[in-house]
Image (cartoon, rainbow, N blue to C red; front, side):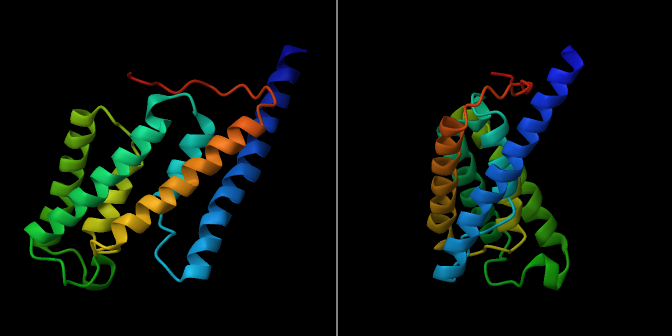
Length: 177
């Protein structure tokens, strides 16, 4: 009987993620479509999952989410500037040369250190810094758009988690804090 309850709980959690994850990214993608902006980017995916799967963890707090992605975006941009890549085509087009290796390494290392210093660890921000340092979002003006997308995603996750508190038991993540 206990096994059946665990399976039912797991299915309910999976359905919550199917609907919640799809809805939250769908709303962000719709905004990106209507405003023809870079409002949709890959690190939103792991952020949405974390916000819905472990909403009580420090890594999923609004503070950690925003500061983590801000740290990633700024560090990625500074890494591009440090290696003279602000006007270079993205790594997906031009390939990975030594300056790009340096920018990617500096961006991830710098973002990781900054998140630790700010006590705002949010693992998906590691993807954001690489998105920027690999030249996929290379402009400084894109950072407020990135943060706007994060704010929209955080708001949706808070609302979904509050509305759907249908006794979903979420397995605990290993949270160092």
